Length: 468
Image 1 (cartoon, rainbow, N blue to C red):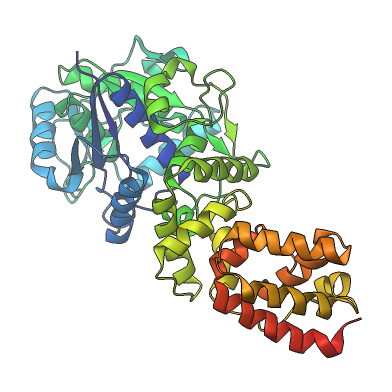
Image 2: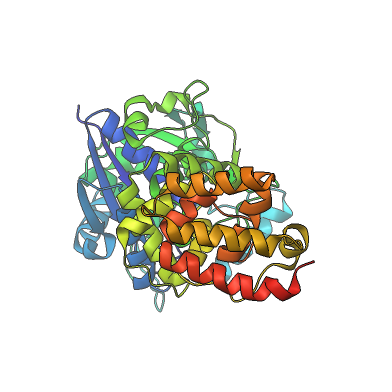
């Protein structure tokens, strides 16, 4: 048997991390077993589905590298197939037309609730053979009245549902349009899906879908219902927790492999390992290792993983990413060789590419002010003289490289009888405006001779008269 999984998002909202984790687990399971991963867009809700949301799904999947083997398929392009299947079920008396009005259904539910019964359709039109004048009927699936449905869930184990607790589901609206649960069944059957991996909020839909598949003569797939993702406070995931478009994580400077690693660990584990490459996840992923309980997001963990992946990523690739982030800050940085050097000295101290970009702006624009706290702490009466001597030694260097710069710095400090910080920190303030930067020798080497000397001259003019 060839494993066939599907990710079937609905474009009624943005693709957020809950959906991405589902897509990832479907993709990993198919890849692990040499199977087929299908992308299916469930866009039958035309009032709420938007082209923008569809594009976010496609762009998000591309950015994440979760390439589908088939699709994208669109449910709105399969309407003829759904209608034909509806007619088949009607002809075989496995479905029927229901002429109940909204008012009648409301009264039925009120009476059930008054009797402390579970509100459900009572099947009053199951045996109706005559149409009702002036009423456009819905179509309901004729669910079995007795027996049980057993769902052998890969994650939750065996879950049993009583058919008497399942009412006759509407599978086509009065306007003839098929409903979500019906379209899913026909799609899974036609696409020969072997494993349905989805959120556990769909578990209650499963027995009805199994009954419909059996009515259509199809064998149900295996099911695996994933636990929910919660916010850090244990509440349902919302926008304030990160239930935003997955592409916003790209804008915030996260690498796709870091986000996938993070999401994989929300509910799945392999020993104590925390950092996984995509190949490692593919080789190790097992649905049997997915936890039953909900997982809470942890932004600090995501930031740590992103830094770990930045430390492992190709410098040239990160340079291009950093270039894009700098452009968003209004900084033009065309020299990719210089950017690779910046990435090399910044990625141990930055958790995201946005953080790296903000900390690297000084390489491309001289500071227009100096941090007051840094100046008060590090600029003393003797500082301008030291800065001037260091400036002169830098000017005399024949090779503008980090080792030569470091030697000049170290030599002057030794001659002056001061610690390296007494000179390195004022130099750092002079070139960056603050007291935080990568190692000063590497910083100056990347900044370049001309820019370094010019910034030291400005600082000398400023601090020469204002030193404490």
